Image (cartoon, rainbow over all chains, first blue to last red; front, side):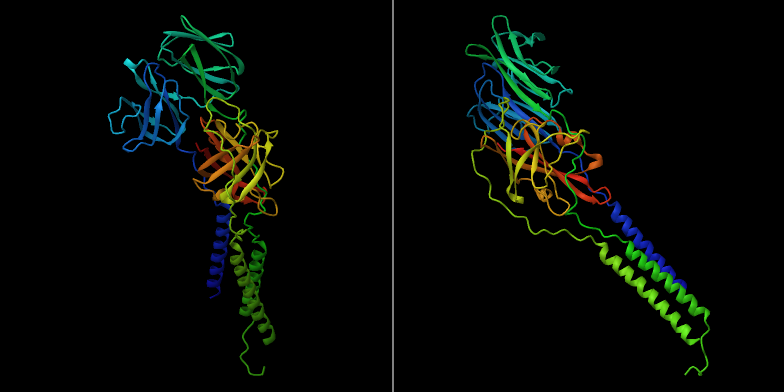
Length: 285
Length: 207
């Protein structure tokens, strides 16, 4: 009888201890970062008339995004998209959405990936190219790449801040990104018969694409900001709370003491009752 | 002799009573007292000229001045935050205001602007008390010094354990204008006097 009681008490105390331990170690849910990517669309073919650009999620016949009347030199802002398969289609400006596209390309948007889908080359050899864009630069540096979209100049040579940066970049081609020291300086682009100067600022942590275009009076440079981050990324988490609204979990210790004392008293009483013989006589009355 | 036996019975009964009372007390107080500060107040959306669509050509964006989140009743001025000596994000000295990290892009410029605020003080709710109840689609307004508004749409609300905080996923570069709203969340460790997690709200500028 008494043994049974002790077993039950022990079981209860163990259960209570397990519960308290469970509360203390309940971990908060933590998940991975977002699963979106970014896409922008560009028309960089000098002698191709304006187009309508359609972006379709793979297998979905209704367009996710339509840009109307995109003419030479236009680069859209980045569109944030769920990671997955997409198709980009170009139609002549004003053509019905049901007509067969002039050109189309498919791309896979990876989580955290950024892409430029650009119409490049001359109209006779127009192609849609998917460029992988960079989001970050090495610490303390800026990244820059060049797209040669001038039909007037077969090749161009780029000089940044007095230093040769890219040579003989052919029409319709894209240079790779290169890291440069951040500065406000002169960007000089020269072809066989024309050249252009532009003062641009490249700050640390930014990524740029400079597009070389044919303007009405010679070469034009379009400096695009592909991505920007913080000058210095904060280290780790932020200490943004002092606990005043946190649920209070009261200390279990006073109750544990009470249980302990009670159990001890019950043991003493129980053992005592056993030891002291039961009175059988009636003289007590 | 019978007196002694009765006394021992009483001791046994008292002991059992105390143990049961202790167990009952433990069971009753084991549930944390849920913090209840009433329903979230809502605010009307601020009005004013809405800034042009995201700039790609690095036009200078004016400094942020105030933050309004109508769906959770947040309206606060934005102070400027830097980094602490150990490189972590500085937090506002007051729990009543939020702050913009000056090392991050300005809200509405390309990149992720970092805005931090306290969930609470030692005595009650802070400016970002209800941040974790934001849902995708909710709107966040930042007014700039030139009077223009940048409007952001919440895309994701996440909770990250502080000891495995994904720094680059939160503060990293982006190709479009975004904001990150940061406060504390999860379990409060009363020994460390600190929350064990951060709540991070991702929002992108609406075009």
